[in-house]
Structures are given as structure tokens and as C-alpha cells.
Amino acid sequence: MITNESSSLPEPVADNEVGFPDPTFSYQSPPIVSPDNPPWGVSKAVLTWILSVAFLIFVPLVFVVPYAIYAAQTTRTLVMEVLKSDKNVLFVSILGVIPAHLLTLGVAWIVVTNWGRYPFWETVGFTWPRSRPHWMTTLLSVGLAVVLLVFGGIVTSRFGGAKTDLDLLIESSYQARVATAFLAAATGPFVEELVYRGVLYPAFQRVLGVGWAVAIVSILFAGVHVLQYYNNLAVIGVITVLSITLTLVRARTGKLLPSFLIHLVFNGIQSLVLVVQPFFEKADKIVPSKLPAYLVANILRHLI
Image 1 (cartoon, rainbow, N blue to C red):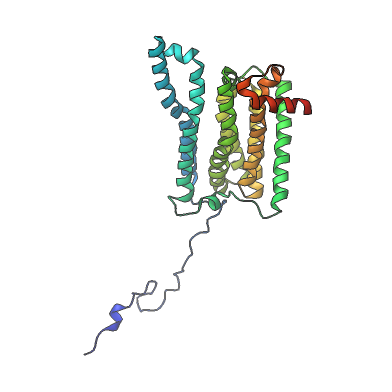
Image 2 (tube, one colour; image 1 turned 90 degrees about the vertical axis):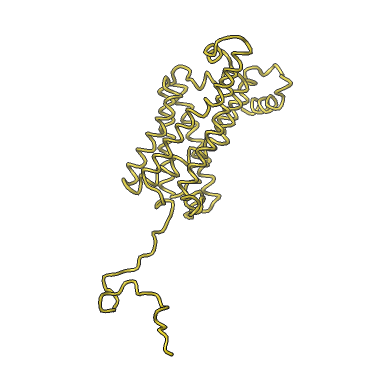
């Protein structure tokens, strides 16, 4: 008995009508994914940015509103009065930024990895550039962060305006000061760099080029911070210069890690100053519950 063995063979994919390979057909390999050629487009990048801003606005309210209602019932006052006068409201709102950042990280992970199809760190470029040794890139990043910090201090001291909302929030209580310093050093640099230089920049750069991408990302970054510093143009100017510098570093190196390190050092030094500043102002008065911070402040005061 003769069997038709050819029936088990796969059908030709690119043959023409007479059975010969089609010369017009070409096998194309999938595009290479890299930090400058990400698997997401402008629409997903902008959506990520919109969600990150929405999380910062609305997620803290999830914690503030229940606290305000509880405090109003306990003190037998109106909820609006609690929101205006209770310093713990500001502290709770700061803590609400932590889950907002976590939600942003979740959205960014989905966009960057396409639900786990691509490696996160390599796709977003959170590695060192290969153009020079790691230690040299580290020193250059730290040095540039210090230069930006000194520049910002000079500009704000000479041209700074009134106290911003962030200044008032920090001065509301020591707990709010420490919470703000923690967010500025622990979660803020990574989340902001991931959204702006990790997700937004490569999407715009691929479509519009480096120049427009740097301009758009810098405007978006500074625009979000205007809500905090709207009455101090000097601070807004410093934030804009910082954003342009971070984005140019991302464009020059093709990686996100150097920008993150610059942002981390820039915020970290300011966070340290925030924590110890009250003890500089009252250096002769030791507060037992804050003794470690006092000792740090006293050492820095003698060194500086």
C-alpha cells in the first residue's frame, strides 16, 4: 500500500503559483529592542506620565480624607477646619506619595516589559555606558550633581522669591520634614528618572529627534514642579536646568543609570540638609528624641 507521505509535510510559505520560491518575499527578523528603540510608542509614554501625575494628586487623598473625617469626629470640628489647621494632614499626605510612586512603578513596568516579554533593566537602560570605566562615570556623575547643587544654591540665594508651598510643608512639623527628605532621596529620583528619561525620552527621541525630545521632557518635568514652586521663579529655573542636564546626559550616554545617580546625589544632599537643618538653628539645645540627627548636625557644623 502506498501512503501519501507528503501530506505530513508543512506547506511552503512563500512559494508562487508554480511552486518556486517567491523572489519578492523576504524573511525579516524582529526589531532589536534597546533603550533608544523601546517596545513602546509616544502614546504609551504620555499615558504613563499622565497616570504618574494623577497618582501624585489623587492617591494621597485616599489617606488624607479618612484621617480628616476621623480627626473631625474626634475633635468635634468641621472637616475643612481639620484640613486647614491640622499639621498631621500634611504628614499623611506626604506618606500617601509612597503608594503613588509604587503604582507608577507598576505602570512603568508594564509599559517597559510589555507585560513581562522584555527584561526591565536592560530595556529601560538602567546600566552603565560602555564608553568609559564605571568608576569614571560615577565620579563624573557625582561631580556634576555637586556642580548643579552649588549652581542652584547661588541662583536661589540671589534671586529666590517667597517661600514655596513645599517650604511651608517642610516647616509644618519635623515629621513632615523627615518624610519629605525620605521621599526625595529614596523613591523620588528613581521614579522620576524612570518616567521622564526612561519612558518619555526614548519614545519622543525616536519620533522627533534628540533636540525636541530634550525640550519636551524638560518642559514636562519643570511643569509638574511648578505646582510646588509657582511663586519662586528662581527655583523653577534651577529645576529646568536640572531637567535639561539630566536629559542631555541620558541622550549622550544612551543609558539611564548616570542620570539617576546625578538626581540621587542632587536630592540626597538636600535631604540630609533638611533633616539636620533644625539642629543647626538650635545647635545649643539637645533634643533627646532626635539625638542622632543632632550629632550629625554638630559634626557638620564644625567641619563647615
